[in-house]
Length: 143
Image: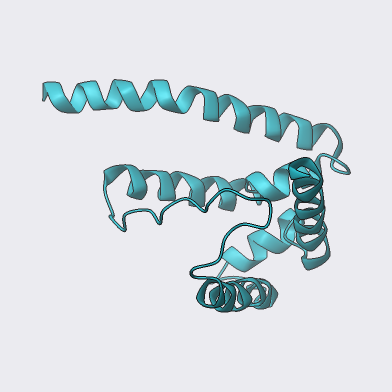
């Protein structure tokens, strides 16, 4: 049952990304080009995702997951060095490539070798990140 729910949710998410244009790198880069040829259409996509989710969170505050178990606790709202650095890296990568992890995986179905190279580099970066973080933490402690 869990796999079926994950398959349906992933299919809906990927379809939404494709239909909304979030997998189109030129549309994403146009959204980020606020001082040039700005394309505001992704604001509607983001609003169309954020507003229903805000309502869903309010309505299901004490609900239990359909497939059993429990929802994880809310994360601690703390802005630290890791969050700030990770946000900057994410934003730079999104701006340069026009893709983030969800649309990148969705683009594997149509983006040819470019999509495969991007996802491979993304997975490589994800694998290297814990080692880099440990090294930076050791440097920070030594300083």
